[in-house]
Length: 156
Image 1: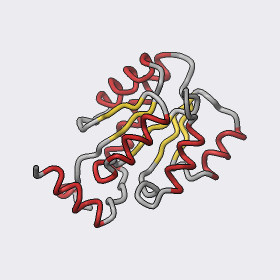
Image 2: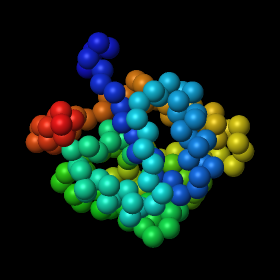
Image 3: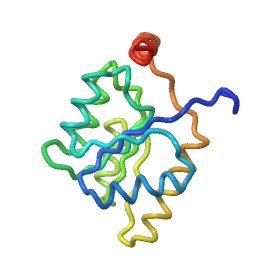
Image 4: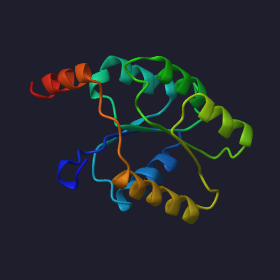
């Protein structure tokens, strides 16, 4: 994709902690993200919103592991089992640095795994770097049927 044809990146942040969500959004913006960032407060809310309108789904999901109602691993499993949602890249962003959990995330189909540092400054720095990463990474296009459906919804 050339620089002139680069499309906007839409993000869903699945994070139950309000403070972490604010820090992530603020610092993704400082890292260069100017596009849509939507938030889901738990896994059920995330899956419901994606299944309600898959054509309006995000280009990338930032997914916390430790959330109420449905944890990040179960959400990831369901996303990667759904033909309409499986191509969405999922970046796990969590405070858990257990190698067992990192391995499990990748086995279930995570695109990346980022550990939230304990210190606020380190956390801010890591999120800014994620924003910079999203500026240069190439993301998959939505399947043709979903792109057509999204155009129809957006033209109403």
